[in-house]
Length: 411
Ligand code: GCU
Image 1: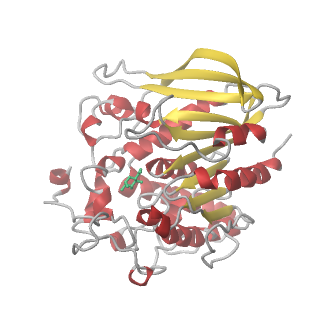
Image 2: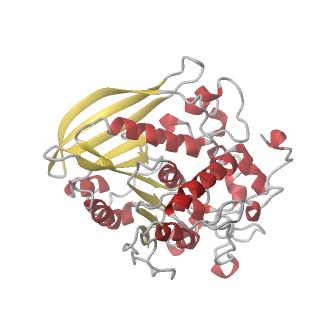
């Protein structure tokens, strides 16, 4: 890809482990760049202002085309059809609630390129006693029973988020991101991207893994909306970290998702590229992460810089308008500085005019809130918790927010 772009190499990223090296990650707000000068959200590419909802629909298309071309890549027409199969269905009790559980596999049609394949794993659980179609939160996650290597983690205090959702009348669903596309640059010839490439290498504008995961979430939504027990107008998307990035891309690209919970998504997600706090673009362009993006994105890690990007993350967040979106993170002190929590807040501030243009309130303030203070009165919500790099500590607040935001859609 570097050869294709005519680039010798990319700049090194920040070192998040060694505080004394010259490229140590910056965690000093005074050196982060504050609120940088950003590309205009509400101006067309030709400079004319965007002033009406109709204008926004057109501006939105311009912005999507830029994210396609420069950051996440475009879904090709050769993306495979997905055929969903119900593998198993079971009644159970979760918390103290009777539920019905479903396991599905989404088989990618690979007849055009059988050397690649994808079988997408999706599972979901609905309250069994519901008399009306229920809202569902879809999460990017892991195979059932998966746990990270190492000593077992202490159990969460309080009930798991899944039981919290059920208690409020929501169902929950988990989509195994890696079953859509493996999280590895060496595996782009397989999965849904591999099927679409049919043996060719990616071009600079072809989809990266984040776009593929988001596309997979849209295919999962196709499957969920076939179940009459689910309210198709109230399906949300959630993710943490790289899956938080994927959840944000999902919200941005697919207007059928009614709400988003974007956790610790950081660089390549909600955090502004034009700041220097925690992760840098050089990290995103390096061996472990470049595959998340379109090839073109590598240009901005050398010779270009983030200041050359025609877009920034505020414009990605704005693509969610007028729908509600909740952006969360831990704190720098509890170990979530890598994701630049303040940079995500500033992006949310800069995105909010899109909601105002559509007659809604975005973030309710542009002042960075104290830790544990949820800004949840507008369609753009923000909260920092004290649990480090997780979504666990924001789930209760997000669920309150989602219940409130989606209640107007209760039939
Ligand atoms: C790394 C990466 C982040 C990513 C995170 C994760 O820290 O640099 O961009 O969000 O992994 O997904 O856990």
